[in-house]
Length: 109
Image (cartoon, rainbow, N blue to C red; front, side):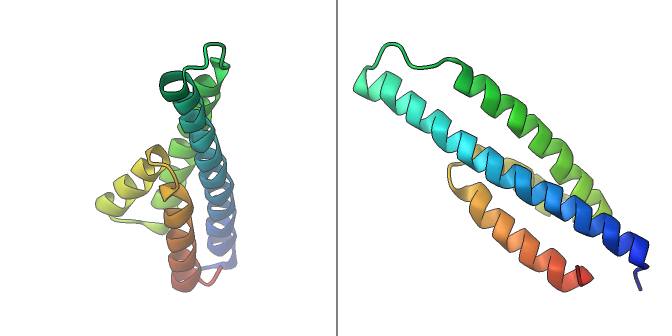
């Protein structure tokens, strides 16, 4: 049985994970758009800072996802799968929904 303090820690970690999963997904889509514009359409002067922003957002996503995985004791395979979800366009949105639903059901947060 979880204490209220543990439930609150899981709830906070879940919220942080959700925010960064969406931010990572959005910045990844922006990055893909930049790459399409640059390499397929041939636009020369696309902003080069988009990849840097995505990289930093993804780094924070990794830390916060790992934090959540420790708090809810995910198996290693689930943790790695969730970490990788931020590298495939649209997957972070799908995985975020699935993990959130699972954590809410398992821990009542």
